[in-house]
Image (cartoon, rainbow over all chains, first blue to last red; front, side):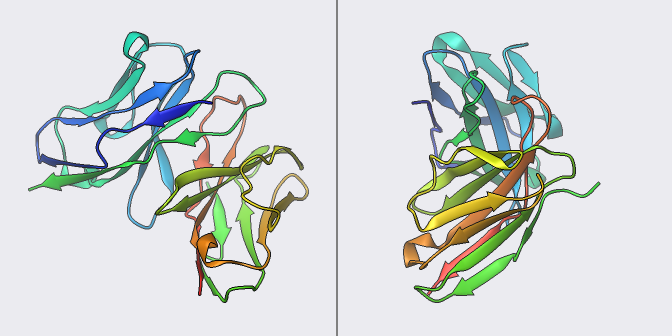
Length: 115
Length: 114
């Protein structure tokens, strides 16, 4: 079974500092990988996705993630944090095989921005 | 355009009662998913629909949970004889095109079982 591990349930960074949210996946075959963001009392919004094309994926709001097969990682980064980035972030995995459609989510990382 | 909508936004019920949660996917989206978000379990997959059929029901936690989709559009998740552990936010998502495409999520229904 596939799974994702998000290291750090809470991350705090200063405004303007680098944001790094970690995600490692467990799969024998590189899967599709996603990062979603959830603002308070809202649904999930896709930030970016990896679907076996470019290993460096750029998403919305200045976020990007790099797929590293050797490390089974898909960490999310943003060079300069903004107050509006405060939210909960979820990494998710979906296998390449068609017919198995479900997303498996990590436990989430709550990002706090310090003014 | 309109996104995925869910109703009600909040539902409070008493233990043992049945509840129905509704999801209106984005028009034209053939795939529909239900997930549950709870403090103890995080985000869990419940069921997946392709059109009106449900090829994957593996995430439904018990036979008290059922879901249907009619006309390839609206879906209803029914929980019978609700228990306190059913309290959670129930999220619906829909998708079009290839299976690697984005799932668009609704705002969720917060269910509280007293």
